[in-house]
Length: 212
Picture (cartoon, rainbow, N blue to C red):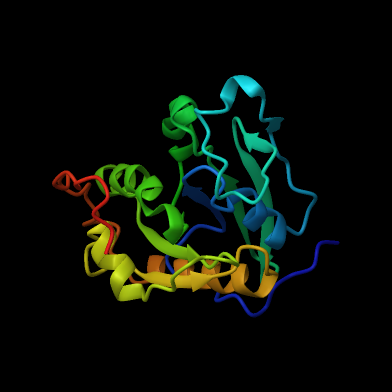
């Protein structure tokens, strides 16, 4: 029997099976987060980065990353014997964005992972979910060796987030930290009135290199 996680809040006004997404740029830690929390062996669609993709996939700050998600990652975590979170990691590279619309079908909420060393890689995911109307939070994956530590307020300003979008700090490698991020997302979903959730208007264009 899979282990349950009693530390997670039992959602109110939400269905028993919750489909949640983990999004963000290439190499930001989506596959790592799914693997850190899943109570089953996670399904991954990792492919080796080839010479043909060098110059297309920027691996300068990804710690020697040699694989990339080409379709999705999938994991599952149980809540109080009655609820299950189905976690889908989304591909980050632009050439795989055609998968996003399909993966979003039935999704209740999203974690957008951010690497502050490459903040611009997060703009597209934030824009997409603002326009789709799917509730999301931003989780800053605190990578070792990042040259600067930014506050949640600074990240919020850089991404031009609306006031109601939560910003949390996390370590995608840590089960405890990743579970706490899921807790934050579920609590955020509990506060929403789904009868009034509507897609947000498009944001103004962000000038290149404008972070902080």
